[in-house]
Image (cartoon, rainbow, N blue to C red; front, top):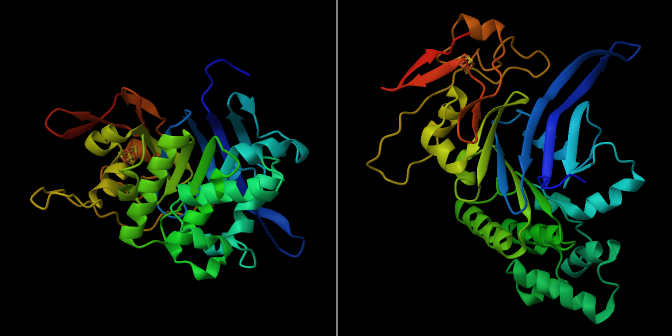
Length: 336
Ligand code: SF4
């Protein structure tokens, strides 16, 4: 293990899904769902992975969880490489990395009571054997996520969406995970319930110190819980910065377009809305050069042929764009 390693380190992650066709079922194309993504998360930190539907952000989460093999790149947990582990070696990883999915109803067994849903990871990972201690741990978990005591003998269908998500969070907390991947975990909830769940996650992180990889299509949702934000477009990270920098001085035109849709709390403040035209191109045949060039309001010739690499544009702030911002709010091409 390397000293001072981040909790999670993802280097050049690729996940390409083959498409098979014809009578022989031969591979005819590939979906370039994730195409060279790198980032790290420190202990106790929240990194949000944000982008439109189909940008590959959920695939990144599932690849880290080893729900399918990756095409390329490396994934490290606390300095230990985990993408090459065999099925048998994955068991300790399952305890340390947990997930909360968007739809708690489909991820909770409808035939299990809350008691059994929360007891399962405690027993499976050998944390508690059973008896009174198990009941006590289940009750403690329920209290941590603010579920009423009488919920213990109820089934998932007896709860609201927000309460079901609390059960999902308690289940993720049960094994004492170092990292919880929240995959669109609040997307299906009403605005007020969404805020309650976000506040709960912030409180739990303060208490237990776990890191969060928060995957969301909505920048507004992550603003109040994240430490850093990585913006994804068509399988690649196009900008990464700490929250304050990204929301105040974003660099990439795609990030600026996403931010322009985020409501501003002050009704007198004006934010110019950037409407992106066209749909996200297909990840089967991504555009040449900059993948965003088919929708970018600033596109120029170089964008169509040369892929912009992530480059530093500030302290801890990287962006993949051929433009430079200059005083006066102007943008000019950077030197080739
Ligand atoms: Fe737009 Fe060109 Fe920058 Fe891509 S590289 S975001 S197309 S200006």
